[in-house]
Image 1 (cartoon, one colour):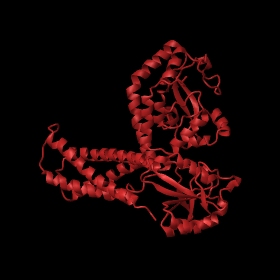
Image 2 (cartoon, one colour):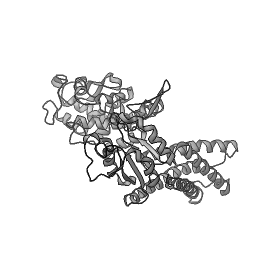
Image 3 (spheres, one colour):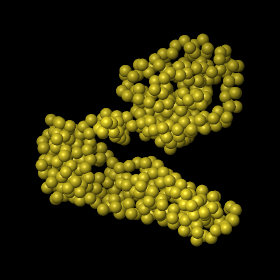
Image 4 (cartoon, helix red, strand yellow):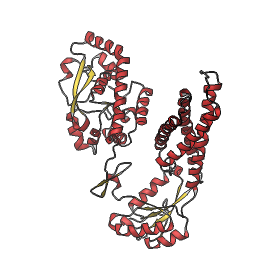
Length: 471
């Protein structure tokens, strides 16, 4: 039968959220009206503010249920919960403002309201993070466990078994396997350790569901026995046990697959790209414009000094432009401060720059080491060729080479290239593995969020402009 732990946790989260919202109200009230730090004009009594805070708390909890904030999150990342927290309170704020307008409560302090909402989000985020980490620790010690039965002891089932053992913080305990071949699936015998035993065949499922406490059944069977799935699912639903299916072709699926409906048929998208959504593209483009304009204004004096230094130290143009492959495989010219001698800057477009490359000028070596030669790329961002964050663009020659050698290399062109990226912020630049870079790029593409972009920018700044692989 289904465990009651999740229902209990859902109630705890809802009650705690409401309590934290009222705590935020008390803190915001004290800061605004009692601390003396701000203008304490108070035309409305505290009882009115308290009543509206209670209304907001009830609205926020209701909206939280609507957007899925209180759903099972044992398997989910905290970043997913954070997005839902922000979403919940933005919607709740809109509803609250509508109610205030409808009931003509126009004298509510706007400073108080701003502090109140920010404190709500911050405090709820902090307590939920602490609670999630505490639950992880408890699960690692054997508390709050859920029990799993794996159907299929072949390669797929064993792989799931191995992966689950690597994450004790999830709090799952494997009961064992059911397999019609007694652990000899895929022509391999199931080792005695570290695997749990095969406790029966698929025909024993009903009996085992009755005799043992099982929360989830994982179907890890090959596609050639898919005709058994309906009976398995029916048995699990009759027993009130959750059923999850691992597709036999999951290696071809993204980290978070999603379904589309086409002509009445469900389709699994092979590549989940959040930036396919127009709302996400608008957010990212608006940020790119604001960030690039700000960066250009702040670094303009530095760029002028660099331009003058280039002119004084070597003949040739200040800006070096080079053809790169960008969004949807469209070519564009990427701008850099020239760091090589003019007679060799355009000699070859098919060679890597090396650490002791004789083509570099002394000033150019410094610019490349500190990444200051990349500053003109903010104009590429402004013109729409690039984004602040994204996979680094490559020259057409290397694109043609790598697409034949590196699996999934061309996936990076589904979004705009960036000045910095997830790979670069992790030190993967210069003479580093192209395969590792592509893995990081695909992870970024499939897991994009505005907060992820901020994290990458922050990580790039914290790690500094210099890099041992930058030359």
